[in-house]
Image 1 (cartoon, rainbow, N blue to C red):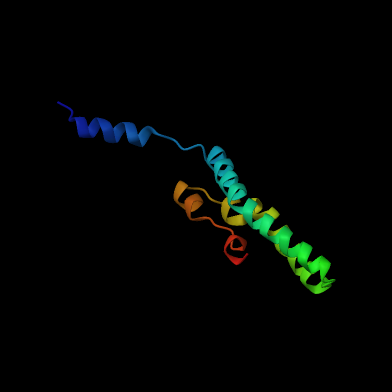
Image 2 (tube, rainbow, N blue to C red):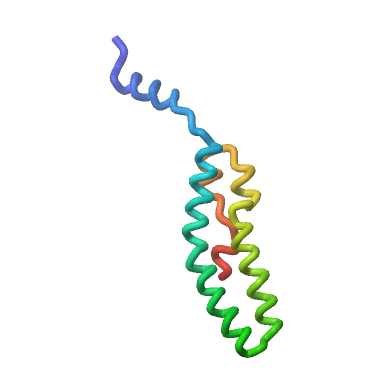
Length: 96
């Protein structure tokens, strides 16, 4: 007689993760996380603009572009397992 535990393990082994869908979900989480960071940079940019601080404006432009590109991070695009995808995190999210 087959045990219940064996049947459950067999069913779990049959589950297949759709990595393309999982990557899109991960990108959506990144979009949600970066939104307030972009807003913060918008405020900093306006202050730099008022102060006519071109160097600061250029720095902010680079940071904003890096945030926009966060969904194209290679760690997300090349993830081949759910564990790799879970660990994928663009560095820019921690630098702003």
